Image (cartoon, rainbow, N blue to C red; front, top):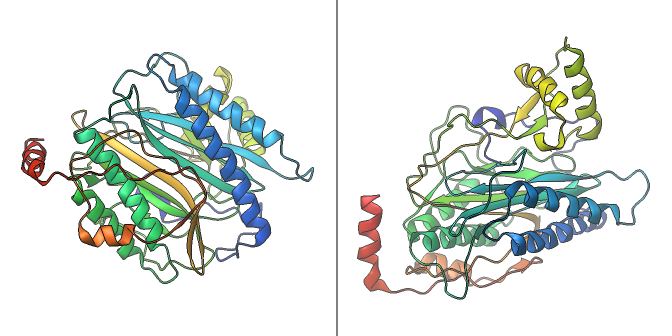
Length: 392
């Protein structure tokens, strides 16, 4: 999600729209809806990745992915009053961390681009999200070097967190395993990125898991994993120090802020806010779905904090970023991951330390497409990679 920490200590309230219970049980009916949304997202990612070739326009790819998800949702046999919706597809290239949701054509994929793809949808408010890192132009030979390292670091962290999502596990333990995974491949978790709990119609709940332990003002309290928790696990790794910054990119995606009220003066702004309230009452929306006139109205709405921007941050261009995001439900016996996508074709020189290897050996329940981690250790190469990391 990659918003500012100032926003996340007070998750968006939708009590005026739906009955919000932070400890709601995941029933057979609600789990079925999570699975329905997840099946659509898993297939949409497979379709999109197959189209992410050199020369393809990012705007076209994102738009077509959203249309595909909308069509799949429309074909579902649901009660007439059931709400469904799309979380806008984003493709963030190379040093861009997340939330790149282009509003016009003009940016195309190039060979070697690291495309961080994020998408999602909901069925009756039960949300499924998925994020994958695709390396453009990979053919019959695996990508090696630092690109491979950061991809495997992200997947290792995502896999180990999955195995540790058991009732009673503390958030500090999850942060520790993310940092261990990064260190094993000479990478760093990206600051400001986080995983978070979800509930019906609530994309950001009350349990927040930072990518790494940092001293941040008003940092949310630690928590324990509990039965019926639903998480959006979002791991973002960097080959650099993981310090990202705002370089002035205009937000391309917003979400209505139900904790803020203001009487808008401009007619255009009032009309746009009415449209947002009707079409996107609690879910994110993309600026690309708005007309030129609506974009002007959005400016006043944003100035008065009636919508929350999804921030765009960047790492230094010398470094590579990789992301893995998935939806997971905690049961008494462990966690069931509902969305996933196999890692790209890479080959890393590093291997897992024993503490992570034993954890990875544990059986898990994964209902999305999977593949083994692309790890093959050559200890003689360690010194070479450590030297490169030091020079960076």
